[in-house]
Length: 150
Image (tube, rainbow, N blue to C red; front, side):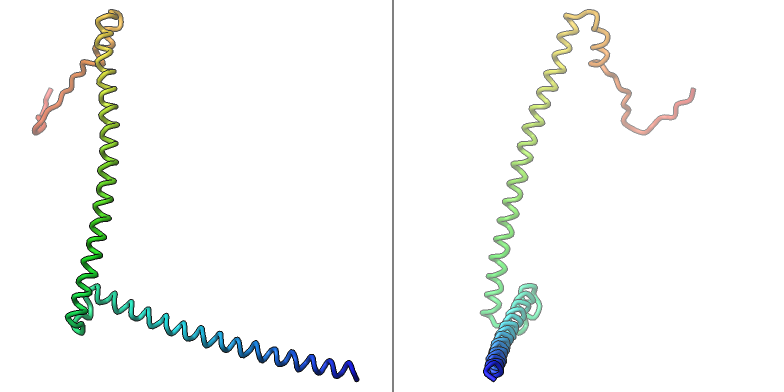
């Protein structure tokens, strides 16, 4: 009988514990529902603000609201223009560095081209080969093509 009484007590204890956790679950559920409603309201306000910033639904705005929207847009434009200028400056710096590299390569190539001409004078056997590389003639014609008959 003693063990039966303990079993019943344990049953009541666990049953109450289940009710307590159930009550806590309901509290958590109510809290989550409240947070969800708050988030929904915030989302709706953000969407209304976004529509106003895009120029929709302005007929219901007061003068103060329109001035606030105007100042928000001005701040946004300043930020956008500053970022744009920053990107342009980065691009300019990159292009200047590329220009320096190309100038250095051009100088190196010019130096290489002037060096074989000096070699032509000192080396007689390679004269014809080097001069044919340096003296290149092209038949460039600017204008309408001519009809050539043989």
